[in-house]
Image (cartoon, rainbow, N blue to C red; front, side):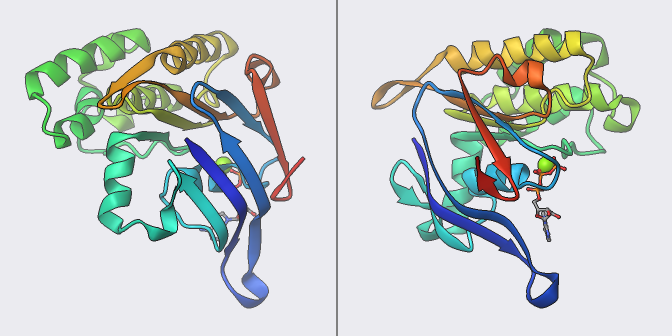
Length: 228
Ligand SMILES: Nc1ncnc2c1ncn2[C@@H]1O[C@H](COP(=O)(O)OP(=O)(O)OP(=O)(O)O)[C@@H](O)[C@H]1O
Ligand SMILES: [Mg+2]
């Protein structure tokens, strides 16, 4: 479903220039559950941003179903992220003026799905992530770990074929971390029905937690922007 072909990403120019990823090639097959590990600054978030089409590589190609994100229009990339690829940001990116439940449900309503149905599903997902009692709270009334779980519920409600999550357990104690991992695994193992028939989802999570990474069938380690 996803292929990175000789991907390099540089930020800035001249003396400010940072090479965040160096010549990365990687294929993600449907059904895979992958953990990405590596030290701070090694390019993990950059990799997820490129894989979701949020950013475009400086060199090389990111191919989604064989099409390079470089050749997609802004509208195509927006639809890709709305309909097929769920990204949970490291910094959550919740909308501060909306409650937890409204944050979960908002992107799903942009797809034209019924508001009432989505509100029901949103409540159900907040229960699953242990936040049933926080549905009416605003992001600044939530702890870091709670905000992160709202962001995960928001990604799952979109029913994406590919779920990319940046440190989804980073602010959680090890017990809640494992329960979020279980949720991601359960979601990742389910299939999604498409016009072309059932498709297996793929999941990529960034984590610095070795006990979380150890549970992933495939692990990718980055160092200084390179695959090791
Ligand atoms: N927008 C940007 N402009 C300039 N440099 C950037 C930008 N985003 C990231 N970088 C740099 O690119 C490198 C890789 O950053 P990235 O965020 O991918 O690291 P990371 O592995 O996710 O780190 P962490 O574990 O701390 O989240 C870092 O050196 C960072 O300073
Ligand atoms: Mg990061």
